[in-house]
Amino acid sequence: MTPLDLVLTPRGLRFLGRLYPCTIGAGGIARDKREGDMATPVGVHHITGMFYRPDRMAPPAPWAEPIHPRDIWSDDSDDPAYNHLARAPHAYGHEVMRRADPMYDLVLATDWNWPDAVPGRGSCIFVHQWRRPGYPTAGCVGLRRDHLHDIAARITPGTRLIVRG
Image (cartoon, rainbow, N blue to C red; front, side, top):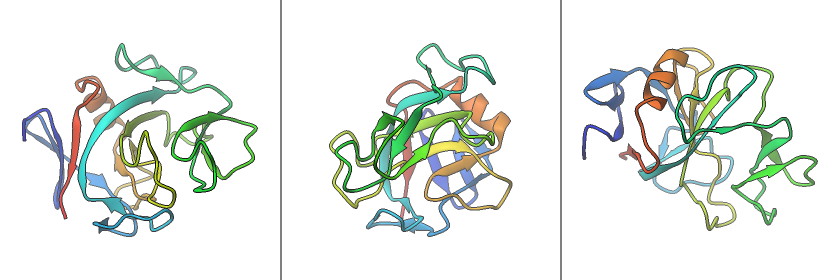
């Protein structure tokens, strides 16, 4: 482990010597992640992308990509684009990336079950803004808005999110 890793601990997310309060999936931490279990998967997950809402904020890092109005993330195991960014209209189940609420204004995507997604193993393990303190996610890691922005400005592609079981 290095100080540049994001390390999930029982007390929060540790990064560069700081401890950030965070939320995890309603299903807790899982060694055997499955689609729909609401769990945060155990493992070493690399940050593979950073997405932001250009109508709500400036790019938080030079490598951040804008979220476009029709961007979605497939969470349907039957979809050939399962666990990948796609565009609406889309005939399969998915999450809208450009949400009305601020939860996905800034998203750090991990390599959980990506790029070669195994159907049913789970999708969309992101680091994103939490709804509120203590309110669980659907399996992602949630942070306070200013903390997420602070972290996003300092990470690089390949930064690791370490989740222990």
